[in-house]
Image (cartoon, rainbow, N blue to C red; front, side):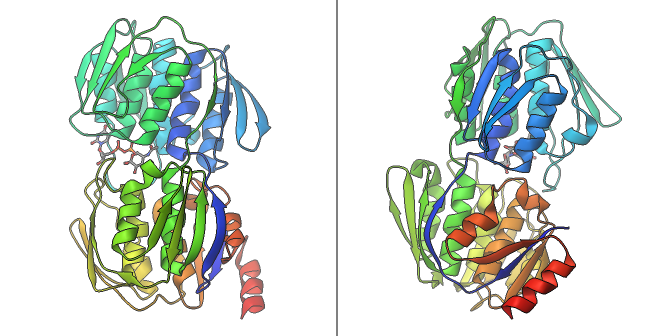
Length: 430
Ligand code: UD1
């Protein structure tokens, strides 16, 4: 099993370029099904969730041509199937977008209950609520979700919960329904807007994405387009927090600073400097951090996907901080791992009470999920000594070439294949 091995305590300096947004990419790739034509998708992050999405498209009969590492031409004119294989759907949460896209184009779809990070119960009742309102029937048998509809008709839906996935599936399933669909209490995340922009470039009529009411007027037919995915706000935030924790001065390039406002605000509160430019931000930190409070909220609030990274930062900030998780029930699984690195954190219900320690010390830890894995890498960068992060396949689901990008800004990090390589690396650096 691959691992990261990190020699901590090196300040980060230089420039890093952020890749395309994972959560936009995993919505837009299934959306190419609706075009029934050729789409060229640019700025796709080279991560395993994208590879799985492309694999699913290919199994469904799409013709896929790689133009370069981050650009693919996808021809969905002649698809041959509407069933997403079980093993592929289970590999990522976002396989649920194939339900909306296939239902919209073919009136039927079958996808296994989606996998992805285990952050507690992650129901999809709000997704099914949209499909049902549009006229589809669903059933769940042996872990497979099947949706079917003779025809889809526009409807008025009020989401009971603000859900990124249900909002995006709402748009996917309504774009070719007859008449108008109104989605209320929608998620406003940048990737929701990116999917709407992609759909509109393909001939859809989606208005209001980025607000809590989205109106979709069904169109009869869609077509292909060339589309470039927005930068990943969470990857950007992760690098910004890495600089804050390890200290240094890094220009984070290819970002939309507006999308980073909640992250930037917290960095300023803990005592870092952040300079904003048109499409980049510079983070400067001397490694001395102050305590603060943070609560995760739907966009534009502080993202739950930055919560573990924030806790890692506050773990070495002066004083007592609190981190409240309001989106997912079980998103503190990394705390035990961080404790092994010297953190002093108590979790009470959905609140982590963090008493800052002077520094982390290197240890052997497991990445419990994608973002927590990235957070442990940050802890390793700030720690004294050597940290080994196991189970990095979680991290590879969402970060393109993390170790290469970190190495370019001065981190001492390597990806090793197995125990033998690990021991060789440790001998070399010690
Ligand atoms: C998406 C992101 C994930 C991010 C999360 C919140 C993708 C592929 N994943 O996940 O990285 O952490 O948004 O920003 O884009 N809920 C229900 N019923 C539903 C759907 C959701 O009760 O049908 C609940 C969830 O359990 C959770 C909350 O709503 O408590 C928000 O979930 P949601 O926004 O749907 O998250 P995901 O789309 O799974």
